[in-house]
Image (cartoon, rainbow, N blue to C red; front, side, top):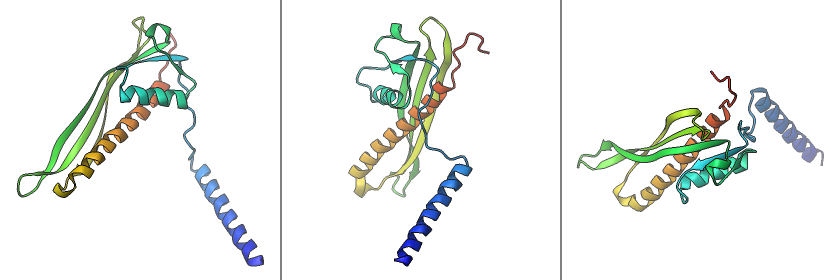
Length: 173
């Protein structure tokens, strides 16, 4: 019994030290983001995966409400375009592509619907490399889709951080 108690105490001490170490270095879990506006209209096509992801992230991680009409919103997030590209990085001896660079671009702007622009048209970009093997074509197609989805999620998080940094006051410089 004393050995078991000593092991338990050692584990608790190790967990406590790890927690203190992480806290001391400034690490903390990502909490709720504070956006500087109460309502937002996201201007994307109705069945857009990007629009659904943005709405879900805003509803889940902020106090800001998404609205269905621009006239009801404090700000309008206008998605100007999203683009997926694929560039060849490496060819094999037969001239077939064996490695690609996947690129996901997102263009957006933020305004209030009355002509005031808070974020000018901006492009964000993410990229990932993927290698292709002729014997694993189907699995690579699903990996490619997963990588694009991962890049989209990364850019949505970056976009939310940019939205959190917006200043809405009249004396903005």
